[in-house]
Each structure stands twice: as structure tokens, then as C-alpha cells.
Length: 109
DNA sequence: CTTACGGCCCTGG
DNA sequence: ACCAGGGCCGTAA
Image (cartoon, rainbow, N blue to C red; front, top):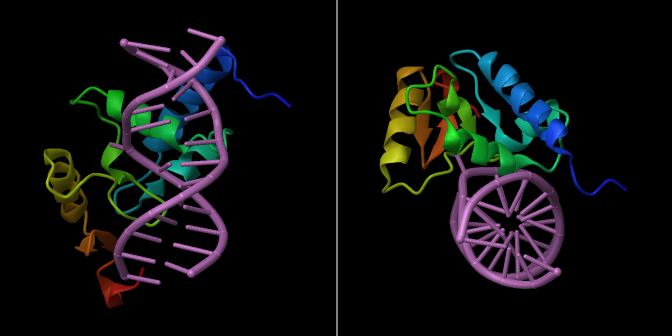
């Protein structure tokens, strides 16, 4: 079973991740693993995290709309990164309770 | 070659 | 709802 992945495949993975991420609209969010799977690389959630980390600070991509599978921000609460992401999400209408993203109406998931 | 380390995920308790 | 433990897999050292 193909354990490893070629460099070319990784390049494809990256471009797919960026492409898919660019289609995530304001008010939506997506999980790392979900993004990886949609890109055609299940089990590569952490690699998605790595890509997000490497994005230039002025990127146009909605990196802040990427959360973990529990719909939580994947940064420690005392960090700047956490604050930046949280503010962006709140400005897009999310209510964040106990570090978890919720929609306004009825506070459903 | 081998460790260590992530913007993670899933399952059990 | 919270947490620990194991698994995951590319990248850097």
C-alpha cells in the first residue's frame, strides 16, 4: 500500500487545499481533516495545519475559517494567534462559547 | 537512518 | 463535557 507520497502529489495536495480553502465563504468553517479529505488526502489533517502555519501573514486565504473537528480553535487561548482567529470569526458572525464555534440563531452547533 | 514535532483526529473512560 | 492515549504523516534536524 502506498505509504509515502511523491513530491508531485504533495504539490497537488497543496494547491487543492488552497483552492478548496479559497471557496470557504464568510460564515462557514471547515475542519483540517475535512479539508485534507476533500483535497484527496485523508489522514493529512496535520499537514493542512502545517500549510496554514506557513501562510504569509497578509494572505487573502481565509485561514481563520479552519478549525478542528470539534469546531474549536486549535490554538491555546493565551496566544496571539488564538485572539486573531477568534476576532476574525466573531466579526463574521460566530459566537464562541467555551472555545467552540456556534451560530447566533438558537445557539445551535 | 532515527527522532521530534506539529494550527490534527478518534476512541474510550 | 473533559481528558488521555494512540495513531497519523510530512518535514526538519
